[in-house]
Length: 343
Ligand SMILES: *[C@@H]1O[C@H](CO)[C@@H](O)[C@H](O)[C@H]1NC(C)=O
Ligand SMILES: *[C@@H]1O[C@H](CO)[C@@H](O)[C@H](O)[C@H]1NC(C)=O
Ligand SMILES: [Zn+2]
Image 1 (cartoon, rainbow, N blue to C red):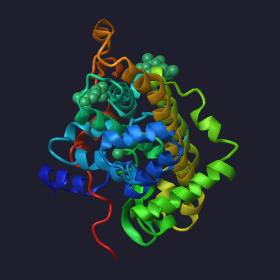
Image 2 (cartoon, helix red, strand yellow):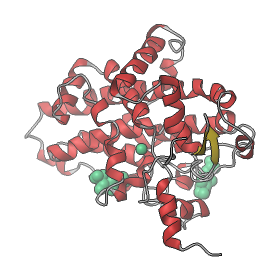
Image 3 (cartoon, rainbow, N blue to C red):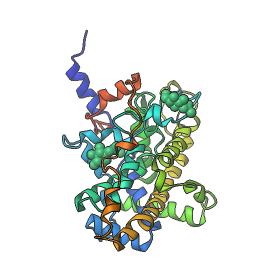
């Protein structure tokens, strides 16, 4: 029996290819808000037109909503980098091998880092750049957003906490974080963020937080973001599927598997928020505060400014790999969550 292609596409549309879910992204946002310098926070509130205490959390999942619209389909590849490594034996990210000629999370972070501080952009485009950065610096810490295997785990069917129709990617994005926190509202995210902030400021993350941002360089965003992707990708081999994917399909992932990975999920959310704040603090002090001062002058220097489309950040075009073809079949068919029925 053959299944019509249109039906296969519809089925693909039901599977999630989100970043962290709403809870994870909002938590990254609240952590970042805590560590933003005061002048950067005022600038960000101005750019977003939101002076509330949730100015980042309110827009943290905008990029996921946007990619699921017709107008925003083009941005789907920017939510991940498909590392074509070989988990659990070898894990590694290679920018020129893995980014793809239409771009990935790494080139997008470089592009929007450049755009967010470019005075030539309209207010709307500056806001777009900031919203993308808030989102992508979260996505890149989710290990399965840095992995091509089985479309980042979207094609690994698993059972979690009694839900037999789950896939591994959606469990990492959404269902395991929600199991931990017990909800997905902004208030849940704020609560989780407060715990992570105290872990960073005076708890178990205190001694390592400096290493999360060590070497981060806004003038070499491709290298920096590739390092962030590699840092998360390592967990695919060591934590996400240390015994391969088949070992995850033999029973309910709750509680044993969940207990073995939830600490990594918390770590990666904390890291994403801490890095995002540090990144924007650096971009602001190096490029935005300074530029505001010389506003309206220096036309010649402006002409020498870079291409706003970020073409320079893309790797050299290469023929599509098998993993890229598999991914292409999913693009634009996002962002249904993994679960259609409660049971
Ligand atoms: C990265 O991938 C490119 C393209 O496949 C290859 O030429 C290069 O040797 C790889 N680099 C490393 C360090 O493996
Ligand atoms: C840079 O951003 C612009 C505006 O969103 C987009 O059109 C362009 O494709 C982006 N380039 C890259 C390399 O991501
Ligand atoms: Zn995303």
